[in-house]
Length: 315
Image (cartoon, rainbow, N blue to C red; front, side, top):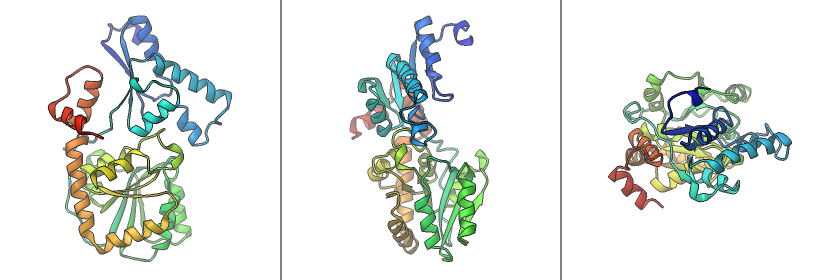
């Protein structure tokens, strides 16, 4: 009712929470003659199917998919968080010309680099550990390194799988793992600085239906990324493009253990990759740049010269 009664807006931007809220944007576009953009954070119903909440061919899934695509096809533009998400949308029959990729960002003034701490190599996970996050490779890696005081695994946050992983560590005597609740936003920079590498995981089934955003805070903190997930994903692409971390295929616990042992012996590799992470962050993923990309896509501002240069040289 507010969308219909308020003064006519210049533009309507809908996200994906709650699912299908884009239909409201479609309605306002038709009734009031305004532009409508869909900013995809999670793809529905794809993510629900990937996590086995919905059956692929159920009537509910087909209905949600039809409604979501109905709105997408009538929008003036769709903003995707990565090329992998764009590919999913194209596979759904959405015109490629309508989709623009605008990667997420972090606040580089709020999250700043701190010196690396001495002591054991700390693998740091920050945020939600949910159904979309791969954990079996991490489990096996921790189990094989248990009792080795040269390593420490720190999980700060919550989510459906957080207590499950904690219980696994208790059951398997993994004494090198520590679990903490979510930290306050004002303490995020200090929290991320506790790690030597920032852990990000994703199950292969969710390729393109989600794009992990943890990587941007890790890069802002000047820490390299350790990503366990599909090779075609946005985090893996960023790591390869900027040399700011390492990618491990899901299930390859042997490579994970070898990598961690190598990094523990050669901390210089960690510090150099962390420096590259912060440098890439400042050039591409700083808050002002990310917000500027979004405003430019919406036609609310002209792209800054640096942004246009980056776009021209992007692969």
